[in-house]
Length: 122
Image (tube, rainbow, N blue to C red; front, side, top):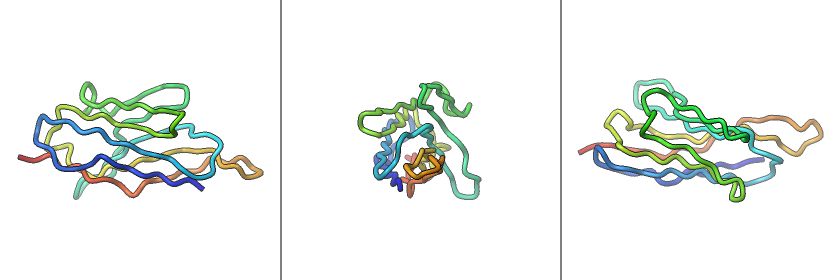
């Protein structure tokens, strides 16, 4: 019912910045949570940042002070502004959403984007 499309990934030098976008489309009533995960080679996928419909925000310790998560509810789009990027930030970044779908049960469902690659290297 919901499609998530990430954009904004690419190659950047250490200390640089990138802004990722996650556009949600399809049939849904509301997106309760928008999140960004990342997965580097040989590592497990980790939650980077999350933002709820009420505005509560959380970050993994390694990105605090460098990353900023926001959402524009009028556009059904989430963002991750990344600054002071480090080589350790290199990973595939995935958008994840918990949405309410318009069936009779008003179910909460999880949706994932296909990911966008962020490479931080000299």
